[in-house]
Image (cartoon, rainbow, N blue to C red; front, side):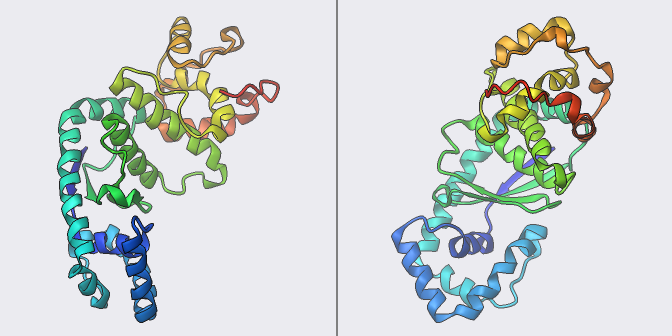
Length: 276
């Protein structure tokens, strides 16, 4: 898998118009545009999906607002900051991509696309844009450079989530927990050498704890390995209550999600209500 980092004027402008206002100046400017060009402004909301589907060939139906924003100091500053941020993200990718690629293959056990395109925002935009099945995402957060591995794994999380799309959407909690275990916990832990299993959505903590022993089996851990992983990750469980299912390590991530859903009555033990 390869990540390609670039900037795109149209997507930057769209995010100025429809993303969170990151300064009073931007907020006031957006209000003025909206009052003057309300119909055109509303019509542009649909452009995001078209851009993400084919950003290189995107041409707007009406470029009036794009041209207006393009001439502002706001856009000039955003483009300059996005360009700088792109170089920083590229450095992170160059540093970690070899180990990430191998670790991700071992965790997911299915292939992603060969190429993904990251359209970089100015960090003050503090946002990500992604849609189901597209290999382009918009990305730029203020905290991106505080923990480079965290940033990279979050980008991968958005990619995998967009690839999975609505898979088993009626069991969203199971999908969210297992994606968190795979990318934000296990991938981060392997790359950083520090466990992040206690990090994540606290509303999913109980379900994560219930799935965790089976997750270790999915990763190929033997029963004698369990104490070491429990110590590493800070998630204790009663080892003797579990029989290792060797078939789990032969599954890919989607198959493991299905396994957990089909066996939820066995996995989710309501009498164990401790929260991580």
